[in-house]
Image (cartoon, rainbow, N blue to C red; front, side, top):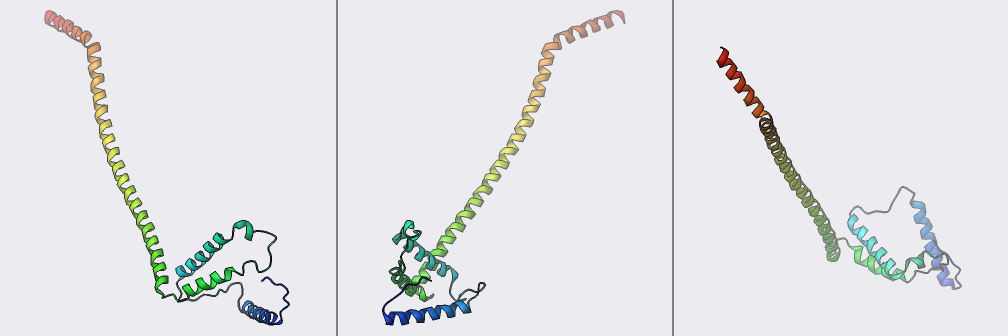
Length: 178
């Protein structure tokens, strides 16, 4: 908590009251506890924090809030936006908040739908790859049979005349001497 000296007595009294309330809150909270409301949607709470963070980074550049020479109460004017946004998000059942939740749910639905479509497309691709590998296997068997046949034909062309001549000689000798 930032503190600074104030000359005004009324402001000093208000500051003392705020300090005492802050101390009371710090005493009731420990490291493991968190202020949460089970009936308030978590998605809406994160949307609220996201809106605050987005507005803060829009208004104040990072060099300004990371600066070591920061004056006390430098971001008091941002409190107006916080209060306005808090009123907007106060009622979880307000139509604008429900619209924001529905938008978030639509975004999640779109992402999930895209993921499922990608998975289905991959499944189709895997089926196509399986069909292609089956065709390749059949074609390789066909080419193997063709290669064996071509080797036999080549061997017949190369050694056929000699084998034919040898058979003729053997037939002639058998016919002549037997």
